Structures are given as C-alpha cells and as structure tokens.
Image 1 (cartoon, rainbow, N blue to C red):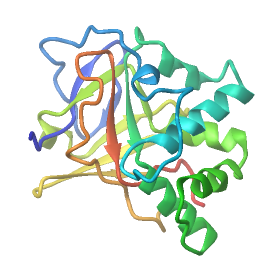
Image 2: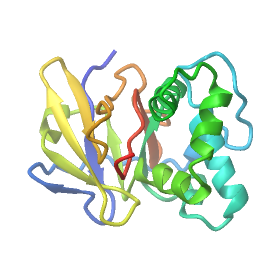
Image 3: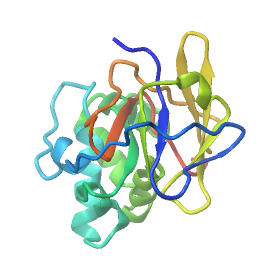
Image 4: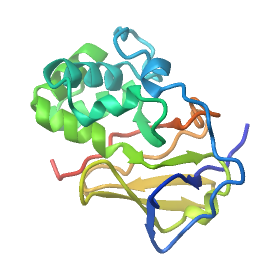
Length: 209
C-alpha cells in the first residue's frame, strides 16, 4: 500500500497557492469516468458500514434535488478535472455528534442533522471539499507541505500539513474541531480519470460552527 499522497497534476489554472507548488504530472489523467458514477449518486443507502461515503452521497443528492443547477453537478461531468476530499460516514457522524452535543449513532441521524443546517449550507460544505482544475494523486506528499488548495467555494482554501508519520492533515475554518486527515487506505478513488477522490476522517468546514 502506498503511503504517500498528494501529487498534483495541474490541469488548467493552478490550484495550489502559497508556500508549496508541485510539478505537473508527466502523464495527466485522461479518463472521463465521473466521481458521481463511482460514488453512485442517486443510489446511496444508509447502512452500518461507516467507512464508506453514503452520507456525502446523500447530501449531494439532496442538493441536486433542490437545486438542479448547483455547481455540485460538476461531479457528474467526468471531463472536468477536480479532486474531492470525501468525508466518510463516520466523519459525518462525529460532526453531527459535536454539533448536537450528544452521540449520533446512525448514518440516517447524522444525515438529518447535516440536512437540518439548510440546503444552501450543505451545498457550501460539499463544494468546500472540491478542488477544481487539478487531479491530485497519491505521490510526492512531502512536496505538498504548506500548500493551500483553492476550493470550489470562492475565497476559501484548504491548508495542507504533511508530517513524518506520514500523515496528511487538512486545515479548514473550524478551529474548535479536529483537523481532518487523509485516510491513507482510501486514496486515488477513480484513479486514471480526471476526477479523483481521497477519503478523509473528518468534515472540512468553510466556517466556524
């Protein structure tokens, strides 16, 4: 299992700003399978497997049902390069527990808690996990230390910190909540295509709850 992450193939406009800039990949991904199809948007079902992505998929479904022209629909366009940091179901359950002040024990309850924030807020949270214009692969992780990733939420970035463990820690705008980490066994989802995803163990927030 590879334990390095975040090699950036810059496709179109640069997605990395700040201290670290990575070289473009020699062979940019050219497949056009969308993340929506891989994550089975439209087919998600709650279960007891908290390591997969049912809640984030359900959230995307809810946004698109309410706002068919939402920018979230880019996840279904496999010709558009982007990277998604996808929170696991457990990540959403932990967030819902923190917001509620009591333990949330099911995916359905976690989804309802997140949906209760309002569809516009859910949309912004989803888009904050999207890094447009680049396919980020699981190599050369140390070169990404100190980088800032431009997200699909205007003006909002994700800070990248790489430790020797190795671990990839993502900084957001919620200082009172633990910073999410990339799950090293859930990297390069949809590898070989212009849209890839990496599982993370927390929900990134573009605001302080």
